[in-house]
Length: 599
Image 1 (cartoon, rainbow, N blue to C red):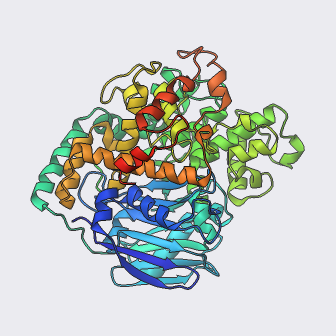
Image 2: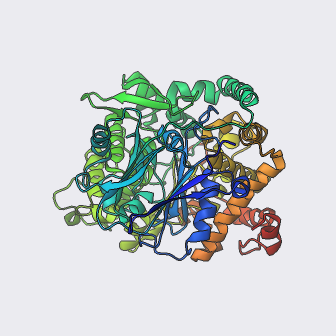
Image 3: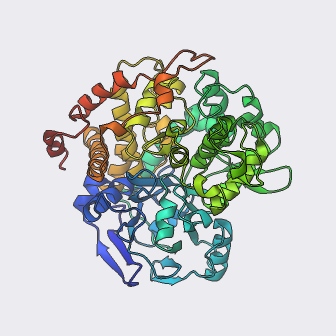
């Protein structure tokens, strides 16, 4: 059935660990991963809970196809309440940790309450133990991983952990696994730190059972062929990684520069995916579990340090957004974020926000003590303030709260480019209207991977749409949001959607689980998950007023380049989006819609 049918519940306060049965009916309604984790979390946690209190819970959930041979079937989700946005958080990560977690025989881990002192969970397919982690507290994610691997002595074990930023409850801290993979967004690392849970190490050997093994193999072979033959997943991403996008997005005038004051970067060639290859930094491609795409980058810098990245978003955030064209510095900043356990997108955007605050005179030079000036283009400042942020030292204490709270503390929240207090990634909504609507309505804030409208609006997949056209965009956004909920819940990577569609996911799930979803049923499952998240957020106190974009993007036209003169037309798009969602004009799901979805 592709599920082990078991949930592990860990009470960190009492150290009680118990196994519970996973309902197959619940699995079918919510698939796994993001959907199943959200359902469990919504049933058990008060939406108004303080995210950093012991009453919040932290859930690790594998997908229905995690640890199968399905292409990219190695992902897992972390579900909790976000301390950054106050929304429900579900942060996705790849690598090999999710695969090994499911090999332990558990589909879901639920962490409750708070430990008295630092601890970590050791889990294999025979035992689960909470162990002392006092010797790990204060260590970065790489050191923590190395120490645990040596202690356990099992070469195939995998580690997920927090770095110093999570320990210090930075609202932009993530959970790192396999050293360089991250459940990065929404501040999930701070929740893990608040529970004094330093790490999880998993070492399972239980295979995932498939309902129709031979038919599943045939389907997988077909999907891999589709991915290999696609221009994005078979050529662009393997050749240049996600940084294949730098020149593409810059060329249409939607590449945010100088903290979204501009939308095109004149030095993009110095920091692009092509530059990573041409400068000799790239060593080889890196693939997550069962991934035929291999978009990861193993790089060695001129000073000899080797690591992974940067991906497109952090490369842009530390680069164009801060007007820094030094690829070496950008790569080092990315390495530091991985070690410190910082969300590299939010970290870069927050530094760009600080640079604008400094540029406008709101942050005074004396506040920097002896640190470098927070000027746009100052590469030295990037590395200095990432470190300060990760350790919450000096002005780093403010930076660690994210760009919204930083800007708000100086009386100018409008300088922060966030949605629901979470930093917007590397696409200017003024240049890509559908993608901007996806930002505004996202259930976890400024996120690009829950509705990747770049596919049709820029890359032409599954068909090419005019990025400035607004007609039909709400319908497209809904489809992408619902389909992404399905993908996240399946345990597959979003990048498969460049080549695969709902019928492909339905076939893989049906052959693995035996559930026999129709395409319509599967898409309705995605819609159910989206509406469940929406209900949680409304009950947490969010309203339609939170479905918006920064004032700059709604009122200040792009000053030059191919998208010159455009603003985002959210006021024209949002009412129709609510209508096709079956929500009221105030963005509230109607009783009829909830009944239709079984909510």
